[in-house]
Image 1 (cartoon, helix red, strand yellow):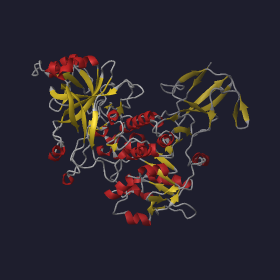
Image 2 (cartoon, one colour):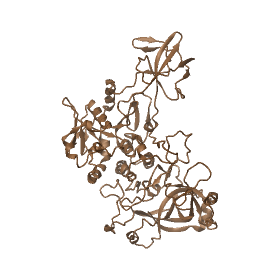
Image 3 (cartoon, helix red, strand yellow):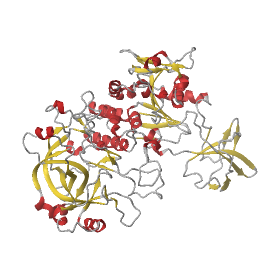
Image 4 (cartoon, helix red, strand yellow):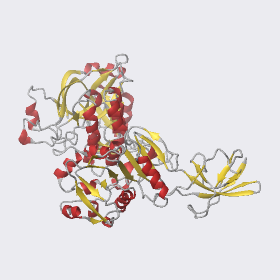
Length: 640
């Protein structure tokens, strides 16, 4: 056993090293670079043409990690990864690409290239973080469109774009697609047309570049003196960055402000934290990640190559994963459910510059799944086939980048409501009606004995006529009755009247119950209990009683909870015959979304119940036993 003293020298000191050691966090010093004891056996290690018996055989030695600009071999290695069999396939070019100019006449000029209908070539795509939308150089608009076709200086572009262009030139690739440059940003028709082809743009690209950081990234190291007998060997030791967000696809809220408040969109400044970038990764066939310390490569749903050779992961959401699934298992219904759940769960955990981007930012993935997996029409983020099952989703709290010791699991912020408008009438039963993480809760492989107890009679949710995956169509009263001027599901089932009690309402704000926790919650209390209470009592007393006889439910949006003692309803969707437990939507009356045209559409005159969703819960059979006499059977519910 030997003690290794770790000298505190500047990281990346330019002194000659004899060996570089790869040590992960668990193997290295957790509290500063001080001392650590390692057990090892004496072994032969080669340095140049000489052999030294001083390093343990269990610790691998490798060269420094340098950027592809510092080490020409790195660029060749990366090009070799990209040039594997079946990777070099010419595909149809997008409507426009950026011609970066390759060959002996290469200069600092690039130009926007208008592709022909039959034009085929290799091209790359760029995935980048849109946090500089106010800078004209990052966008093509109707004002500068013609000049961009003639050519412009690469130095007019942001550093991220310049480095992506330089990399394409280095490997001899002529074209790259950058969304902000290749789509006319102030032309709604052009944006809509190009957005509908997003799945093909990224899937057909030779590879996608994800610029997490500069392409000049390198891995810092510390100098370590290894003493064995009379020999002293200078060793450079580097700590391998974990990069959980990139490698495992875990998007976490930046640690800005109190734990119960969500960080503003501007603080979500990483590619892996943005919703649009998640879709770009999921749709791509191959992806290169340039990070602060190294570059990584992923394809076929797996991240398998990196410079340090210590990162490896596979899963849904990585480059090539969705394409591989829809090609190999398009008729595996349980598989489709799990894949869609994983995709939606990861996607909704990310941030957007505009809350209305939730459906557009997922349209490419939805189109790819919808065209191959026989799930019926796409309805505001859900699928027509087995729609009752797809209604069973729940909101989750945002995950935090803070250490677990600093942040209470309960008081991390709930999702927030995306408010309904006639221009953007997102129905409450869609996960796109709120901003924040969600997951589907019906798993057929766990709930095979559960039976449906509600039935969808009609779907009245018009999607965009040009691209049904893009967004819910705006209300058009002038098109009535073709447009019913409402976006709802007509459901037949039972309703149970209840009362809502919550610690957070617009009237009273957040009500603290004596602790530091800032969790927003709602409690369902059966009507026959609440009718006997004195509702004029202090809110804290009512909450104590509500918890005793009621059931806490999973709220959809923490900023959109009904007032205390207000009327709500339970709508059971599934029932377990053995325990009589029921999976229920929590609903409330909906008036502001109701139009005269919508009422006239209800030709059968059964329009009493116009409700909207505020949460979901699983209630046990005993609870429903005492509520049995309150059941309103065989009701027609218009769920908006």
